[in-house]
Length: 388
Length: 129
Image 1: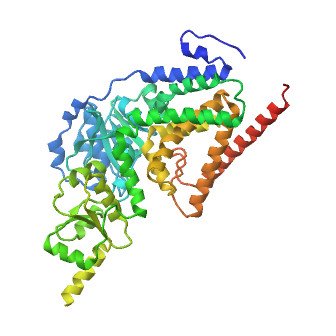
Image 2: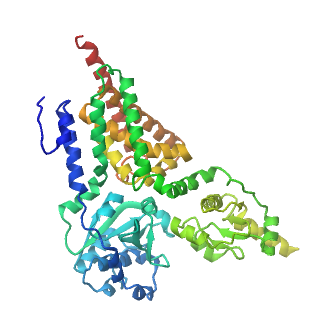
């Protein structure tokens, strides 16, 4: 095997155990050098270009999230175009809203470019030179058909987001919350076609962090020749990966340490289904009715917005299962702290009340209970009382 | 096989919260264990994949690769038998749901790892000294 010295990729010289080690070392370092160079990021102050009041005055229907997002992104990108030509509603071809193809066509007809990209993650967003229209998964949409928002830059290490379905429209959200609901697909909005470097971020952004791997393998390759058994080698590799994982999880921007709330949010949603909320009491419909009439409790509706608007228990507050973390914690902060909180959903088969109760525990509420009977048993109790 | 592991790890590291969601969807581990699996597994994939590509600690990396693929195949099979229609968590959106495709690919990769491991052991047992 040829042993080649390289002045440019200095540390790779040490990877002399075979050509492949040298090649991998150079590859990892090359990726690091290319992607470590920070490109000009979307300026957060450009968000002032969005005509917030003009957009707020237009009634928004659920299927227009894509067109509004692309308008907001194009404004921040400094593109000169007529937004009302896009917002007339004729460009949306699907019943549930715009497809990626629709948005690409909308951009082309208005004189700018929307480039579809897959594999969008934190690194891509933070290094992007242009705003990105992001596709969110079905869990954030009442129609269950996904949702579009616009990523417009960064402020105080949080993402600036334009979401037409958010009452505030423009808000900042933690990157971890964004990652949680992103599908990884989106459209980069730019005045002209993206360069090859822009396109590469989507595929290789995460490889930016791979250079420590070359160091680990270098150290592993220097292990004593006596460690020939498969188990000894496997153990060493396990130890190396565990150490690196612990470092990553506690230091990276998407590490557990800095994003424990998102991690707890995800865990609460799943584990709550199979357990009762800690410290809670399951209330009967009779006691529930008496407590509601007396005004002794704070009621929380765990169902989605559509169900809440159709019918909800008296004085109940909407903190639905479909709420994103930042909105949930904002709304939860308005709950009175001097009364016990009772969460309900549709019926005994519905587990949403347990999940929302677990999330309220995350928000700091300790006196949280579930009314398992839900709307179904409340209505039955109401009928019983009316019948005498 | 090494590049497959590296590609999968890169996707998971790119969005660790979606990978955590995928781990939780299997309904096998929760809480701390789910965090441990979702947080540590991509790094193990990356280290093993890198070791396979570079030939460093070949025996150990093949053993770990075979173990990973076999465990993943087993986990997917349990999800199928329990009737869970969930994302496999393999390569993000490239292979979305657990299907015969994901099972086949995982089984094939595991078989290759085992075969190469056996070859490696035979090669070393036949070499002089």
